[in-house]
Each structure stands twice: as structure tokens, then as C-alpha cells.
Image (tube, rainbow, N blue to C red):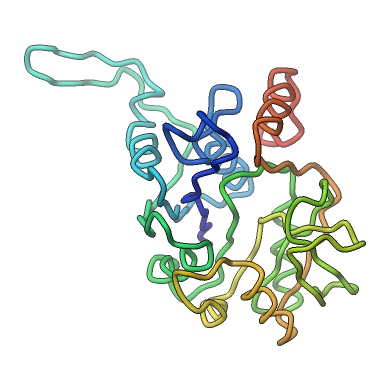
Length: 256
């Protein structure tokens, strides 16, 4: 199963961190957020990724293209330009398609543009700006058991994002305005190809309209995650995650 990652956003509230690159390239520890997300999915055996880039997407392309050599010692023949690698052992067995989905394309439009690369199969989908200790096996099991077009993960951070109102295992309302439930959309979604029909085009965000259409048709399942989740929306979020990482036991580092 492939994993789609939306990595085209600018993240303007992160200031100089995103002046030189896209939001998923903001570093926590010595690694960009994107690396943390890839490691999380790979821990559960998901190693095929389709990354939708836009704003300064060349940074992501260079990072992934150079990843192999950056992790090894090199012998460089300056006169000839030949480069040889001493070790050839890398734990990350990732296959990544990096797809330019346009600088100004909205999140829903980015998902639609990835359709040719995802094939006619169920796929995972998340945003490139949050880390979590979410159990992906449990998420997938719920999606398969419920049989709806889409499953989203609901989390319980401060209400700064679109909120979900839930009844049992189904989303019954999706709103950009805070409601009393405290549940918000935390990314980490699973979609069947039918979801592309719910997105009108490049100009449409993934929420709220496509989500509301899925809700109206009874096609949106929810997985409640009560463990760790934290999105990076502003510098205070980066600072907090840096502190957790440097403390030695960040809760989302489940792969070690």
C-alpha cells in the first residue's frame, strides 16, 4: 500500500524556517519533519511513498536524491569527479515518488493530482507537518472493517484546526469552526480511489468541502487516537518538539 504525503505548503507562520524551504523540511533534531513521518510509516512496513510538493519542492527533491550519499562516507576524486561510497548499508528501504503538484494548488487538488501515481488501490494519506505515535495497523484494520471510502484520524490537541463531531465510528459533522467535541482532523488518513470524485479541482482544499461531502454520503469513518500527536503550525510547536527530541525519549520515535 502506498502512502501519499502532502508536502507543498509554505508554513508562513514558521517565519525564516520556511523562507529557505517547504514546511516538511523544518528540522526536529537533525532531521526534517518529513524524515520523521517516513520513519513512522516504514516502521509498520509501508515503504512506498508519493510526496506531493509545491512550495520550494526542489528542497525535498534534493534531500531525498542526496539521502543515500549523505548517510555514508565517501571517497571523492576531485580531478575526475568520481565518487565512491565506502559502506553500502542503509536501513531506510524507501521508494519515493516526488511529484510537483503546483505551487498554489490546494490540498484537495494535490490529492487529485496524485491519482495517476497511486493507482486503483487503497492508499494512506497524511500531511507533512505532524508527528504521532499512531498505531497504523489499527487504523488500517478499522478502515477495512468499516468499508467506507475514507477513514480519518481524530486527535485531541488545542482546537486550532477543523473539528470533527463523531457518533460511534462515523464522522457526522466536519467544521472549520471550533465545536464542543474537542476532536480535530489529525491527518493519518486512509482513502479508497473513490475519494477523487469528491474533490472538484486544484482550487479546493481537502477540508472542509470534500470532507463534508463524504459525511453527507455516510462515507467517512473515524479512528480516535488518544495517544501523542502534535502538528507544527508555529515556532512554539517546533520548540516543543525539539525539546522532546533532545530529551532523549520523544513519544513519536516508535521505531527505536
